[in-house]
Every structure is written in C-alpha cells, then in structure tokens.
Image 1 (tube, rainbow, N blue to C red):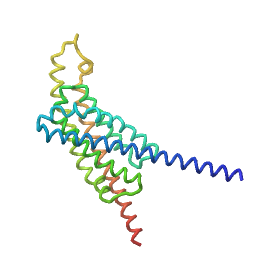
Image 2: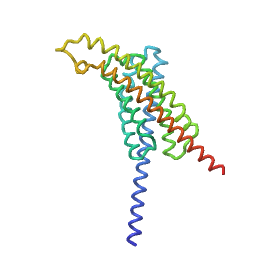
Image 3: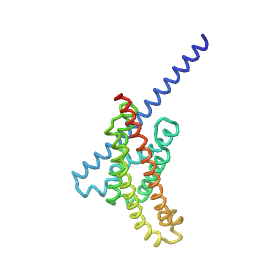
Length: 240
C-alpha cells in the first residue's frame, strides 16, 4: 500500500513538472514570436511611412526589443541541454553567439546604428526567427505541420547563409569605422577598443564567423534529413 502511494505521488510530481516545463517552453516561444512580430511590423510600417529615411533610425526604434529577444535566446542553450527542446546544441550555440556578439558591437558603436546594413540585418534576423518559432509552438502543442516543418528545415538554411553574409558585411562596415578612429587616437586618450586593437580582433573574428556558419549549415542539413525522415516514417505508419 505504501509503495503504491509512493508511486502515485512520484507520478503526480512528474506530471506537474512536465506540465510546468511545457507551459514554460510554450510561453517562451510565444514571447519570442510576439517580440519578433512586433519588430518586423514596426520596421515595415516605418519604411512605408517614412521611406528610406526610416532606415537611419530603425535600430533606435526596435533596438531595445531586439536586444531583449536576443539576450533571452541564450536560454535556448539550456533548453536543449536540459532536454526541454529537441535540437542540436552546436548550431544553436553558434547562432546565438554570433547574433549577440554582433548586436553588442552595434550597441557600443552608435555611428554604425544608422547604417542601412544594420536595418537589413535586423530584418533578416526577424525573418529567420519568425520561420522558426511558429514551428516550435506547434511542436509544443503536438500539432506539427509539414509546411512549417519544410520551412523550418529547408527554406531556413539558405536564409541563414544570406544572414551570415550580411553579418560579415556589417563587420566590414564596423572595420571601416574603427580603423580611422584607432589610427587617429593618441595613446593618452585611447579607449578600451583601441588598446586591444579592435580592428585586429574583428579581422580574426571573420574567419571564425565563416567557420562557425559552415559547421552550422552542415549540422542543420543533418537535422533536416533526420526531421524530414522521421516525418516520412510517421506518415507511412499512418497509411498502413
């Protein structure tokens, strides 16, 4: 009798923990989806209202929400490690780190924030996340869609490659800005960025960005093969 009660209590505790984990991951994905939807809608609305003039201050209008969403995206590494989310850790780690590193650079260098390439970067980041989070929400609700599955694991990959190319161009724009600054600054008035020679660090970072993107694409292709293969097996089982 005692053993039965103990087993029942353990079962109830496990079910409560499971329901809490599902509620948490659903809330997280919903928050990210709503945040990126707001950013994209704001960016598009400003462009249609002000035209090309809106590109100069897009970061000022959406930068805080974008920074919050990207900062919270670090939690996804813990989600995967804890098993709440079924995904590969390495490609997600590369994606999260490259976004946050570039975002920190843009925040610290205010002169770069008005560049059109920053607006393009934010736009592509939002498109990528809006292609991913709806699929995650459907998976949490256990109602996956083949259309969203295809978008998440097929269309997402070329868009990611384009995003990395824009990230590289953004770093090039940063280099054009910081190199004259580092050359003209005196030793007595040198900032932290010039002391550690930021242009050199950015030049070193570019090959790592390319390498990380290559590994990420390779991992994403493997994940695509696995996910679509699992879906095909599931459909064949239903047809029997």
